[in-house]
Length: 221
Ligand code: IMP
Image (cartoon, rainbow, N blue to C red; front, side):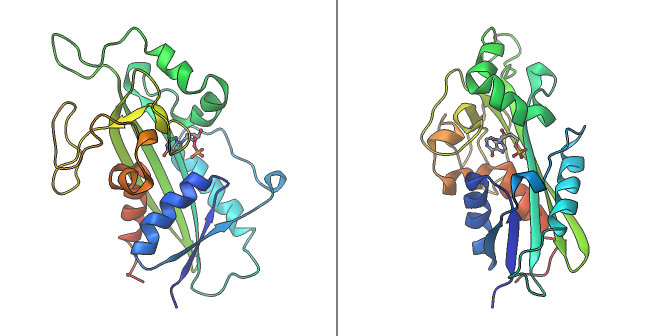
């Protein structure tokens, strides 16, 4: 029987992405639900510290169906905008729930996508994710980055959070991200994560990369 990965998240978008990635590796993914008043999200200086706090809390709330060999997964992510010196970064949740996607677009409204002199992408940003797993008392950490840029207007449809305003850079044939403005084998063709489906986002995303990095440290299921 496939081992179960209990993912502590209230975000169904994150759950769908983890499910999409991990079922291909032979794992069952189930949502670990803990009442909000039993959990807290620290405002910390790094994604790692937040994720470590979450895993320590998750271990305190093992589900009744948890059996030997099962694993607990938590993840913390954020959007880091270069022109804003990495803001909102670890403040992503707060910024999303206050100024939201339109607020980020307004903060960058004075910036063209491409610098006419240097060709640098002035709206460059990256998503970062840190995934932490607890397995048989051992903690394993995976990290993932997805480089891209902020769109000039939101493109919605799928996804969650900042997905409607983030356009990932193209990937080469080995799924490695390319430089800004370079055409690659894999592309969203200028679409944001909000305008593509979960399978496509999974090729590019910081979350898939963090999970890949984490699970590459385990024997396959
Ligand atoms: P969290 O603390 O990891 O849940 O995420 C911090 C903020 O970033 C939340 O507002 C999320 O909606 C947003 N966020 C995290 N991951 C993604 C993503 O993959 N796409 C878009 N927004 C995201």
